[in-house]
Length: 140
Image 1: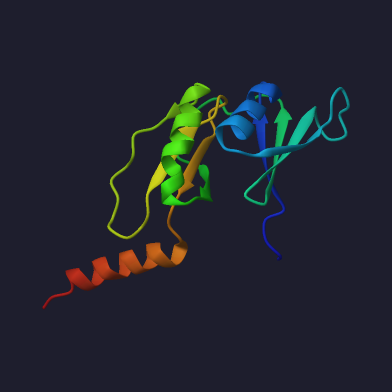
Image 2: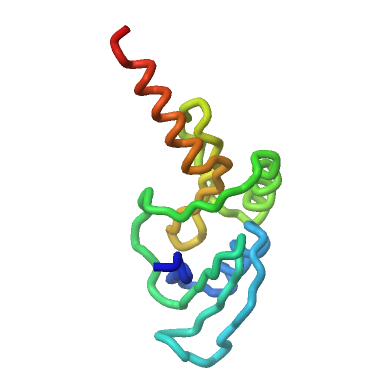
């Protein structure tokens, strides 16, 4: 295993997803199939933080869930993302309670029920935060 190749999102409107990814999150569009269907349907490809994202035209998820993809961002950049996403009409979720040291997050739904998280922490920081909680709970 060499890592993640790409993430695919099934969306009702490719142009609307382009707005969300490019204008809201700062992705770069690198491919548009136009009227061609080399795969299952029309599609667009994007690069976001070095990750290949594919958007395919089709029936998006019927319901929202907490299943999501998270991108690491700098904490100082969160207000700018919040402003850009609000400007395109994306639904920003209220922050969830956080454990000290695990980083901050901005949760946002795209227009097709996919949940994205912009997160400032790392796995190492999260594990250290959880370990310190365990240590605090040990009998003394």
